Length: 73
Image (tube, rainbow, N blue to C red; front, side):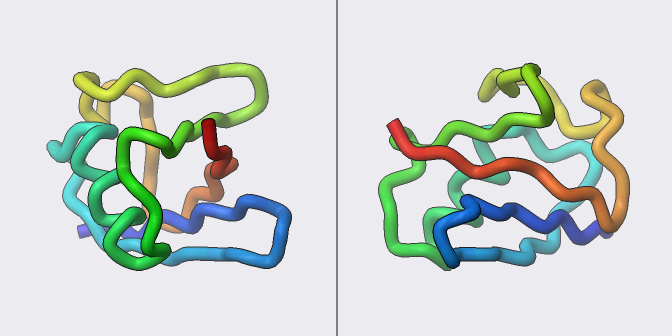
């Protein structure tokens, strides 16, 4: 179990617990449940890497305590 922090830099900072074998799409659904936005409108980035929905967190080497950038499209 790992905890990921997502910050949209507009005042919303979300901490989500998930498993390493969850996909980015699963993580987006957990974030959407906490923020009240639709999960398909969420974009997760780290620097210039936009994370794809079907790839697992462990494949992107997302670890416990990592910060991701949260954007809305």
